[in-house]
Length: 244
Picture (tube, one colour):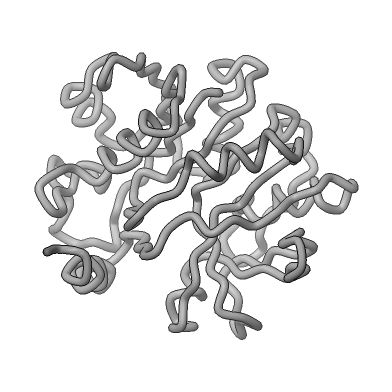
C-alpha cells in the first residue's frame, strides 16, 4: 500500500499567509500543513509516499527530502494546476499498479483512524473507502462534498461536489483508499462545468456507476480543509477542543 499526497496547490485564497509562498508549508500548531498528511501516511503503514508537487515545489522538497520517518518519499511534478483528478493521474506511473491511500496536503484531522479504515478496505475487498466526518455546519460541508449512503452498511451510491443543499451531516474528506484500477476511470470522469476541471467525487462516482462497492468510514473526530483565513480560524477553534 502506497500513500499519495497531493501538495501542488497555490493557496491563493490565503492571501499573505502561506510560508515560503506554498500553502502546504503553512505552519499550524508547530508544523507545516503537509506534515500532518505525512505523519498519517506513515502511521497507517505506507511502504512509500508519492507526493505530487507544483507551485514552489522546492520548499517542500528542501524541507522533507526523500525520507520521512524511515519511509521513502518520491516526488511527482504537476506542471500546471488542473485539479485533484489530474494530480492523481500525474502520479499513475509512480503508483505503478499498487493500491493507495489518498491524502490532501491542506487537511488536518483530529483523532485520525486510518488503520481501521485500511482494515475495512482489505477485509471487505472494497474498491474505494471514503473517509468522512460528522459535521453539523452545512457551510463546512459545502466546501468539500456530501454523499448519499445506505445507513445500514454505509455503501455510497452518490457523491455531490460542493453541494448547495447538503442532505445530511456527513462531510467527505480527501482521506480515501483506492484500488489501483481507479485510474481506469480518470478518462471517463466529466469536467466540472463551473470549475473547468475534473473533481474527486466525480471520479469515484464513475466507479460506483460501474458497479463497484464504495463505502464511507468515519475517519476522524474533527476535520478542517485549509483554503482561506477563515479555515485557519476554524482549525484553531477545533484544536482548542483537543489541547489539554
